[in-house]
Image (tube, rainbow, N blue to C red; front, side, top):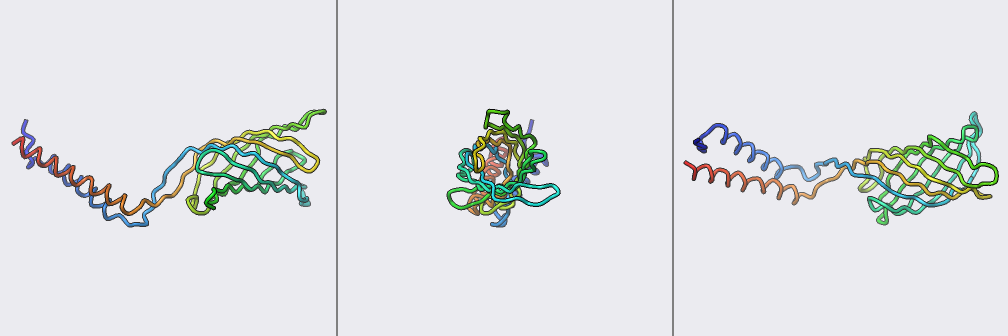
Length: 201
């Protein structure tokens, strides 16, 4: 079989490689790309009641902070939650932060809260959170996660620990040099294919 460089099929492949390489090399420096990553963190902290919001429904307002371990370099959390005493369900906003100051915004919503039976101070809860953007590397972030956790009721509020697992999609801007190298890397490949075809004649 003759794989001549003049073959339309081979010529088309080489032209496609060259066009892709040139497009990557000349891509705008600010062209964003989306990347989806696993999200898994554990948060431990404390909540404190700060007031009530008249209803209906009546809501208890709580503020809290926590330490974070897990993915994406998150190290701390700030929580602003509202508890409906009639249903036992809480909802509100959480801000996760990295040591460098980037923030991830999340809306949390408990699906289930099981309050402790008589003689116990331990409660359990579960729910979902939806990522709504942020600052720094989290600007425009989307995605969500499901969490489960436990809490201990205290005279002034409660302590808590929960684990949240899901995925997060970030908007990243590749370095211009990375795009150029990726693009130019395809051009030698096209040349090598051409030389191989010519030697086969």
